[in-house]
Image: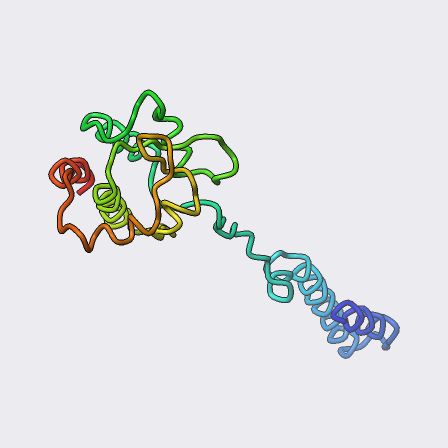
Length: 190
């Protein structure tokens, strides 16, 4: 549309001839001004600012995966957490190394074969979940997703934690057997 208007106006201005008078000088000035304005408008329409005004860029932000914990945590923080859990014998390091631990918490569940083998009973694992969620609040963790849906958090005997047992663990005991150890582990992040 802009090209049609500017092109038509420039054609009309050139096709209009006048005698060599003061009016001729004024018309030449109008022609030059018209060319400069038309060139500026045409140039502006080729800029990305103009294109984005009419065609806004698509939001390429990746939607968080449903098969991931989507935790805002660094690999260094996870490595520190792993070392502290091993130090207090809460993770079986013979079955879970630090790379597996990091993969479980950061990558999509189906993209690896890693699992975390906790050496925690029901109330202690529930307390771990609560402290973890509180310490790293930017996540999409739910109790069910963490223990049941992901199928990546395993008991010491190799079986999965039962969601209903974990869910009700907080109502049976106020503190777990590993409360003081878990507090020490998560105190590294405060």
